[in-house]
Image (spheres, rainbow, N blue to C red):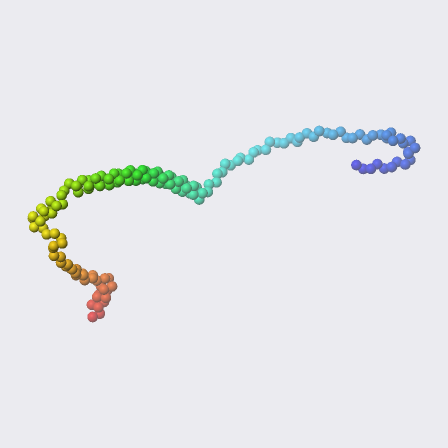
Length: 157
């Protein structure tokens, strides 16, 4: 606000508070400006696809599927391995039983007498001879280089 100038010529009649009051201007309520409706922009629903990321995701899903199938296959193989291990141990025990039954089933002295009766000789009394045989080596087949040399020797002879 601007300062009031000092009034000097009416100082004698002036009593503080007797001056005319300046009315403050009425505050007008501002009305909102009327706005015309604006057309909304059409939002384009664009979806951006990164092909490398899609390929990576598909590869990861494929590898996950292969890994799950591998785990299932390994689990089946382990159950089969355990079953076969039990079967092999059962066969080994059965083989040991059959071997002992077989060895107990014949008499070695009786077999020796029968062998001597048909003319067989014990190993300790037999003559041994050692024979060595040398196998002749085949003549090596001509290589491609040998064929080329032969051709040029015949050509320039």
